[in-house]
Length: 295
Image 1 (cartoon, rainbow, N blue to C red):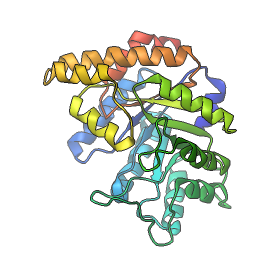
Image 2 (cartoon, helix red, strand yellow):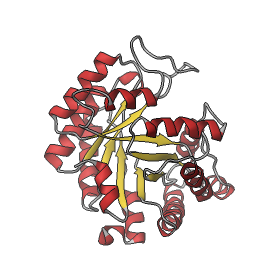
Image 3 (cartoon, rainbow, N blue to C red):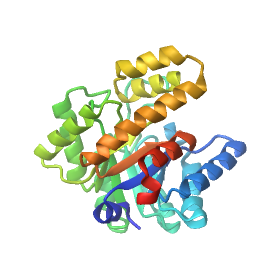
Image 4 (cartoon, rainbow, N blue to C red):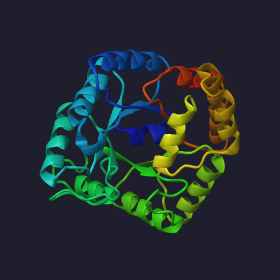
């Protein structure tokens, strides 16, 4: 089922994001986590893509397993990094062969050590070009629902929020069905982002991306990468709890629960959890919000 349909039919569409593990042990653990979280009846899950496309084969294999063996709807991340148009076409064919109907279309980050993104030969410079290529493809144009990324606080490479919003509208105008935001910790950024997007003519669902604080240095790293600010309340908690993993996880669950409750109460179409291949925090937030029971 295309994920765009979930947002039309469900009051709150809940989804989880995973990344391809690097080891067989990690993959075994991931499938256990997916099975744990399946009990919460998410609408769908997504699987990310590595830099330089170096987890492409794993992403394709994992989305096939999750869809066809575990029985969850799934969206595969697809980036412009390191792929020509012909390679993108082959990936689309492979996804369709596995009955995958959903893609998260992204430009992707520059490889580690490189400051600027460089399009590969015969490839794409921007996610909008990737969306256009898929939508206008004679065989795949209607085969997939397409999600794209939004940045409530502005893209790290484009802090001009007006210009960044123009880039987002271009992705939507080219055929994106859903916008999923990067992580943020202050809901005012999300609500402001949605308001500006609606005024610009973007009408598709804009889904908040949530990452519970479960490890201080990890959160600081991800926030820096995606341009998200960290509120003083979280900074103080990280400093206060230090290496006390249980305490910081409890704090992160409580903080994310408050954040999610307000988002849903004030009209967010759902929640997209960046799980980091863990299930404890997500399961507890679900319990706190009665999401599993409410569906």
